[in-house]
Length: 188
Ligand SMILES: *[C@@H]1O[C@H](CO)[C@@H](O)[C@H](O)[C@H]1NC(C)=O
Image (cartoon, rainbow, N blue to C red):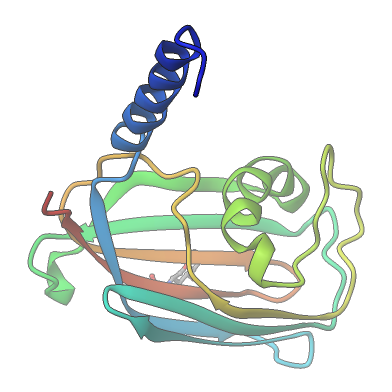
């Protein structure tokens, strides 16, 4: 039998765990509709990506990125995001959820570390680091194998609609992807 004093403690921990599950949990569902990739020079960078359905309401992104160049001080990263209520191509309006154009090393030390790695680190051979990114980024073939984003680093609440993200890496080759995701509010 459990000592009587322990019961309230166990109860308290359980309540904390349950509260933690209810708050700080995303209240939206996402459905990636398409991913389109581009590269201005495939001899330097070749990219292919696809979205697959891996279950009810679950989607996975797989990609293959052949890095045949070494990013340098001129290499910049930028992402622009657009939202459309109807999904109509002409409806997309720019939204402030962007990654301002910045040197790639700066991107590595914030967005890459805080959003990319927590979401894609476990399903890919993307470069991992704990503290600070040390250039150069190695030339290699990077494979994302059925990555299901767990939404780490994303807000709890996101307005419904269609979102388009254009992620670009520039100089000496310009490449990236355009992802369209449909967001719906979760029915509780
Ligand atoms: C994506 O961004 C790049 C760099 O800003 C730009 O050249 C390209 O036209 C954009 N594509 C779309 C479809 O918005």
